[in-house]
Length: 391
Ligand code: SAH
Image (cartoon, rainbow, N blue to C red):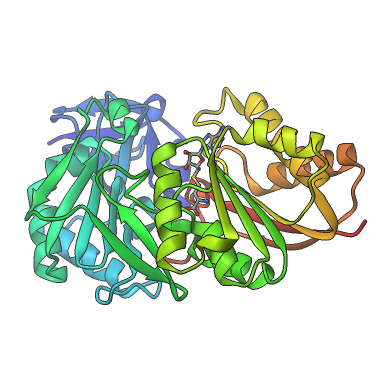
């Protein structure tokens, strides 16, 4: 039987509730299966710890699926999906966007399922999930009865697992673009061409915070993508909104969303590099009452951490300088290697260099349908700080 035996002392992470096994922690492999096959996991004394999807080609060589002996079959996956659907206020009906399965934190490591209206978008990010693709698709169809299931398996992450990149309908067919409602605002979602699965569902609640704070303010949304924060701010009564993104396609979608919500007169969207735009606004002495920074992850690995923190500091310092007294900065980071304490320390350094004093009004995280596994700090990847300038 395919079995992984851990080196002495290497069972503590699993025992503390974290689901990963690193390749370097494995002392012995018996009857090695194909990448992604389910293996029994033993501690160094041969005691059973659980069953994991194993891929010895990947650094993360095992992802724990179960701590029980029961077989990992179609009924197992259906049960796990049912459990996920029942938690975190998730909804399998209605027109809104919602994450239904969030990988490790839903005990389905490597599986992402988002729902946009009656369309499901799935990502099989590991060799293990790829192997049980048909079982998962059948279970999702039976439990959710979607119109179609679209596969965004073009995430570069899959290369680490030795998987090819591809996208397309996994089941059913039809349109890949649609409108969703969020907080009374309509947003355009393109699941085939958009980033992630089409929309940044993890920022849902933070967009509502921005909407509430925006009234009467001049707003700058850097890294605006399809207008999530920018259009929410306009809907919340912002005096004016500027949205900036490097992607012309994202800007076109943001403009469509502003028009659809009858907010175009107060919204200006520009294709630009946010670093350059922040610099030129400062040169022109433009000031804003609310600035939002939601950049892409500046680092995907631990190695590039220093450079990433420099990048975060630069944009935050520049944004801080643009605020009027009493102005608000909503600043985010989705790199999981930059944890909340590091992020706050970077903000302190930026504020000192900007010669500005702030109240830290809130430190927020991802929306609840992207649950955080307490034992696995990587699952809390999104930081969102709300700062108010006192001078
Ligand atoms: N706030 C958005 C999500 C932002 S994702 C929402 O709530 O929907 C990050 C965005 O930054 C992407 O759209 C990407 O195109 C854009 N981007 C990446 N580098 C950039 C840069 N240097 N300047 C401006 N935009 C950039």
